Image (cartoon, rainbow over all chains, first blue to last red; front, side):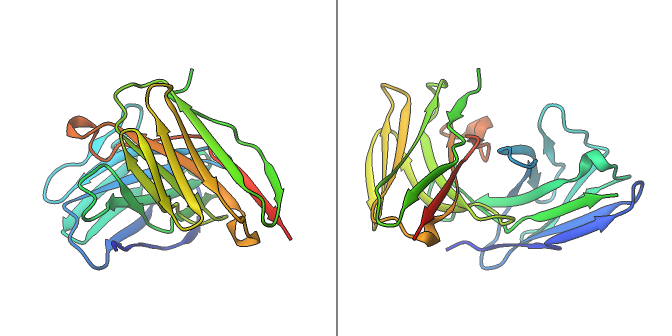
Length: 117
Length: 114
C-alpha cells in the first residue's frame, strides 16, 4: 500500500520565523499531494493541492503567501509556513491518493504538529 | 448546517461490545465514503472505503452506506481496547474539481475499556 512520510513530526518555533514541513511518498510517485490542517478537537480541512511541476491550488480562505507549497519532484512536496504566528499552531497533515483505488481515497502521513510561541 | 455531521461523543464501551458509529451528510453528489481511524497526535489511517451505496466488511469492521437517507455507518464487532481512537468519516465527489478534496466529519472519540 501507499506510504506517505512526513518530517518533522513536531516543531516549535518563535513567532515570525518560517517553518518547512516535508511530505514524501515512499513507495510510489505522487504527481499530486494534498495538505490538510487540523485544529485541536476539530476535523481536517483541505488547505491546498500540491501539483508536481506547477503551482499549488489553494482552497478559499487559505493565504498562498503564508503557506508556500513546492512540489519539486514526484515524491516530495514541502509546505513552508512563513512568518509564523501563534494562530498558525496546528496539526498539518499531507496525503496522496491511494494507489489502485481509482477514487478520491487518500492515504495520510503521520502529521506535523506546529507550535508557534 | 455542516455538509457532514458526526456525533463527537465521547463514546465509551466495554471490551467485546459492538460499536456503531454514524455520519449524516447533505451533499447528494458524494460518491465515495471512507472511515479513518486517528490515534492521538497521529495522522488518520484509512480503515475502509465504499463507493456509492451498499455494505462492505473487513474483519471486525463493517461499513454501510445508504445514499437514499444520506447516512453512513461503521460497525465494530468484538471491540478491543486497541480500537480506542477517534473515528472520522470522510466523503468526496467522484472526481474532477473535487479530486483529493475530502469532507470530514468532526470525528467520534471512542474508548473501549477492559
